[in-house]
Image (cartoon, rainbow, N blue to C red; front, top):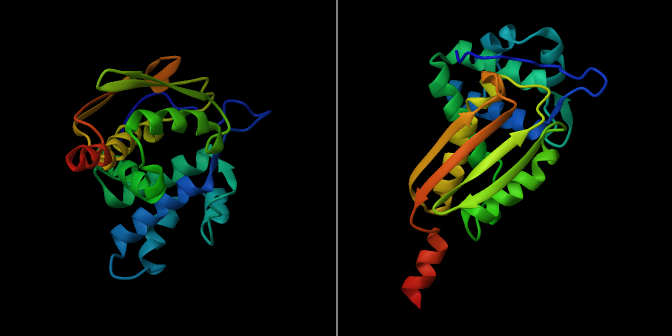
Length: 211
């Protein structure tokens, strides 16, 4: 399991919440992992036994993708996923990639990565009700910065590099590098992800070839 500082409820007057679609994506990855042939509630029983009762009651029957849930719920889910599947860093990276596939539709993979990343930063408040994100493009890459997180966990942050790597990869770039250089969980007052890539988006390459 990853290590670092963790705060799950840093603002009781305005509890930190996360959109259900993120939790739903993580649970869908687990279902596919434990029961690849067909969904099976029995296959998930060991997992649900590891989830705190309050979280289990909120999520076990159904997760509403459009509803808000306590940030602590996604951390409890991911911690239990790691416990039943093993190999924490690899599993958390797999969850990040899965979210990039599950929650980012094909119509969003248009234009280029800088456009998507800038829009993703603007929409940060649509899936987390705390913190603020910004994106600054650079030559062959960019810098994504998140500030003001009153709740955070190394479990949550561990999936972010893989998420962004897969999103950028879907655009058709190569030589992709995603590094988290600062983190709330490592005594920082912000999370910073540095991106580097080569080439251009696949759609642009096709237009050039057809010109």
